[in-house]
Length: 256
Image (tube, rainbow, N blue to C red):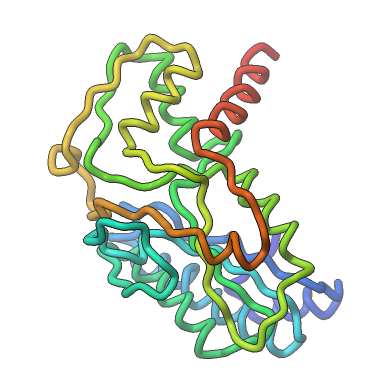
């Protein structure tokens, strides 16, 4: 591990290990806590990104930076394209957008920003893990039904990144959207998690206004992925299919 907020240390590692690529997945992702820890959110989501962009330009490295659907305000009724107007509603989204903007300002070659949404994985600290844990302990949980987006399996995103790395050649930073295919609400997502996990917990749909959260979220943040599909000739799995793979792996871990 390395503290990417320390530019000198970061440069030392880059120079020592002679990297060809940098993939920045580090971020301050606690959307609610970012509202009260704004300095920390901006340090990691903006200042650290500035450090990386400066050094990737200096050392002529390929750079992939992961961003978020929360750079949008959710007022659209069709999937967001890369060049659609950004207007984040919360500190997390604002800090991530600043990170995108500083990359564009520094203008390193062979650099792309990938906006993604509703990431989950086999590991702890995400919606799938939380819902499964609650489903094992409770008879009913409340989940919002009026926020619409697309769940994204981190494994799918990782595989795409590895596949496209050799083909990233551009004179200025480019933005792409990637999520799994399909559309869902958090309620739909939770219902499918319970179904695939074979848990009897009931999911009660509620409105966002009834869910106490410090940070406002976009009501619609579906991403249009046509650009990345056409540029790199990739096929994207449907979100339910990827969720099934993830749950299957988690159930095997439960048995072990």
